[in-house]
Length: 171
Image (cartoon, rainbow, N blue to C red):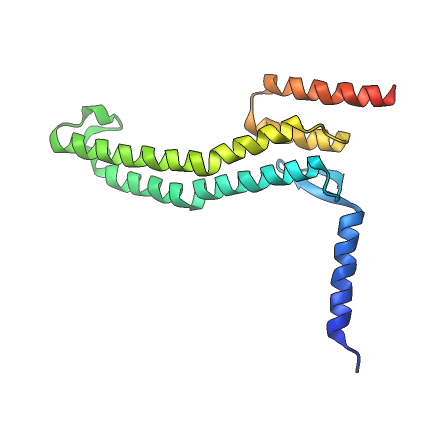
């Protein structure tokens, strides 16, 4: 009888080897797919680091500690909002103190989120923008990420730098 364990292991090695040496199709947010080499170039490493940081940030925002803090704040302030409307400055007496306490707790949770998740995401984005795009496909990935992170006018600077480098390589 054939040893299926060793053939499965060999198949996995073949697949992993092919993935590391052949072009891979990387899905970019927004539905664009860009063919990129699956090697670990500086750009690929920066792009991967950005996506890891972004995913951690979004996970905490939507499912983690910040989401829990936000949900708690909403539950705590619902009776106050019903009584005074959305403006916490209208609250009086003990209600005002409670609302201020809830607000301070929420602000502290947001600050923890910023320090733990948002600042690393922003730092990873800055590294990604600083790394020259090795291909037009990589530049498109960089533009797509930048479109989620910054205003369109700020994108022009790094696009111009990368395109100038591409033009110099051709000419």
